[in-house]
Image (cartoon, rainbow, N blue to C red):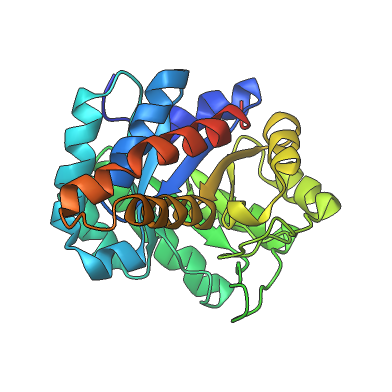
Length: 275
């Protein structure tokens, strides 16, 4: 199997009570490690190019990288634009062959978020591409705070936009380095009840205890966890170990290749915990 849309991997997850990892990618080595981990487990994987990745490297390069990995993989691989802030960003990703885009209108007034998201959903679906939207606002650790998702707003957002997945704010926070987030289960249940059949997405998955992620995967409509910080911490530790073990090494490829095995092992554990 090769390239897959978000809907193609999330609907089975929603039906069968597991979740799929949306892994934040920053380079070739980590993306390759994540696909290797997914293949070992026989699990689908969502490779994500977020704002930081796009500032570092053109979106066209991310597209080529993700598609090269997907086309050689034995499991479904989704190439996903994460936190697209404008219609233009999403349209560029669609034109480049991304199989999924996220339009993040969470900072907009509700009416505007619905209207802009619905327009991008229509363009994505016309091209055979999935679209994720966000209702409520997921804050950032040590920075901008969250605005929890209102269940009534979420029901309207899901119905009027036709999104393939809906990111929500129920206690999750971006960029947490410790698993300390507490999920508001009654709010989550109310959101789920108002949007039946819509896979829910938790951004800031690194801030949740692994047991919480497992429980949500099996017992709720949460079908996708975005995981970045936890994996970046593994990357940093592995690179520091490689530098310490080989102080005279200067070859970039050798140094960065040393992080792939630890990353694949870490990613494998995370993927296993969602199934």
